Image 1: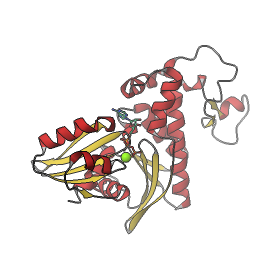
Image 2 (image 1 turned 120 degrees about the vertical axis):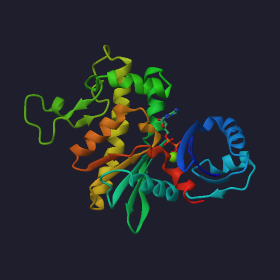
Image 3 (image 1 turned 60 degrees about the horizontal axis):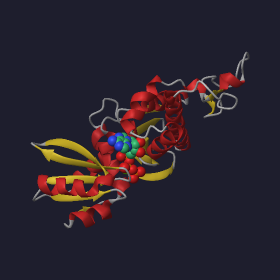
Image 4 (image 1 turned 120 degrees about the horizontal axis):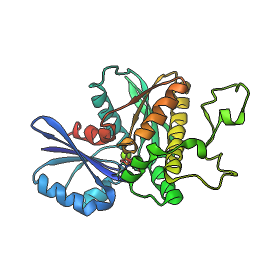
Length: 266
Ligand code: ATP
Ligand code: MG
């Protein structure tokens, strides 16, 4: 058996073949010992390829010799594999991985490189949500956020240009969390969560759109576990990317790109 593993800052993603079909599973990186026991039990005689920031920690726990792979290499390889199954596969694109942090890459037929990123990512989503609302469970955050109203927290361009025609779309956010001033009551937990997701979504989108413009690209492929079950984030990112004139593609199972890329490299 072959097993590809992407040990990230928050989640360990695993891809393996079962009856010629790719199976995908994830564990929290905080449960390293449990994950390694699971791996030993499930794959007593497998070949492993490991990628991600916690590769070395995982390898020490595994106590096996494993193949190691550079994170961005694995991620891009996995993305190109997953893209084959989508209808409108772009030939060249910006790749944005919203993991614990956010990493942005340029992918072209002749190669790929990391162009930058932002510290605003899935970890920010968890951290700010916890600070503002005391909701700390990821599943609770993504369940509650869609009920929130961002207008109570964020300031839109149309809020500033009240009663007159703004020079840019009134729907654009003028200031994330900029509407808090003066309002001290009536803001509910889901409102804060929706606005945290708005902040993360708009930040990663802005960075991505600028990268696309700089390199003459229009397609932006978004991946990362921050989109898992997170309709609110997916919507902010898709809508905002379109509003900024680019073409978003939220890749199904994209969070497993690194693990799949590692699996394909054995
Ligand atoms: P990095 O690539 O930055 O090292 P990573 O690979 O662990 O980190 P991802 O797995 O892509 O990152 O995404 C992690 C984010 O996904 C978390 O910060 C959180 O916002 C979100 N997330 C989704 N599901 C969960 C979960 N079950 N537990 C915790 N976070 C989750
Ligand atoms: Mg990662």
